[in-house]
Length: 110
Length: 113
Image 1 (cartoon, rainbow over the protein chains, first blue to last red):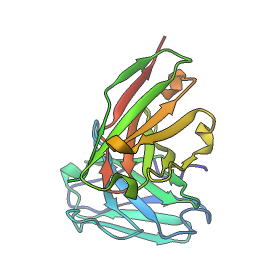
Image 2 (tube, rainbow over the protein chains, first blue to last red; image 1 turned 30 degrees about the vertical axis):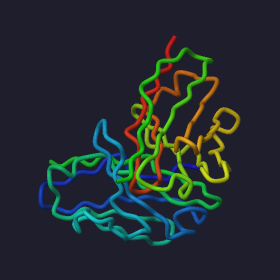
Image 3 (cartoon, chains in turn blue, cyan; image 1 turned 45 degrees about the horizontal axis):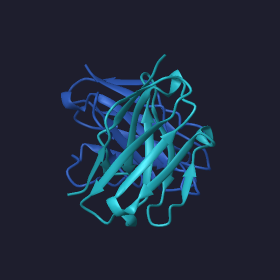
Image 4 (cartoon, rainbow over the protein chains, first blue to last red; image 1 turned 180 degrees about the vertical axis):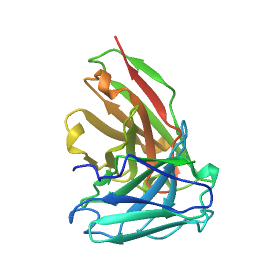
């Protein structure tokens, strides 16, 4: 049950696109299409942005998109806005009701 | 609307135990697993385990095996997470969640002598 690997930081200017990666193994990311992405602002609970690799919950802007290739999932934020500045976490199902999270990526909007 | 409301902040001494509650409303409590996740300062989200409120069955992350117990009281739609043998590294915000859309507001547990 090792944490998924995310870059500690990412940044972009308003209007640009940024992609955050999330690398696991065949036992988690690569083995299931159950990757989720969460946005967390300081002092707030995590907010679901993407589920099942690429699906967006109601109310999440279509600027947020997800994908997966092999053992690596990605979150792309297009048209960056100031309010997108937050910590982002990926998570994956790992079998037997086990869930594993990534270490988190701090997204800075320059 | 679905709500998960957690108990208030706790301060504990090393070696003690803490029990955090999570009261569910707005849906059938026994129909969805409750997961517990924590966030320590400077660290990432960490999954601790799950509990099925209907059966009481549980599953814990290896790291917490032997130290965590997840229970429920279906008569009051409340889930509990108890963590024992606390150490300073357990200082964190603890969340209950129906993983995905619904999260509690978080409970700060501070472990300090």
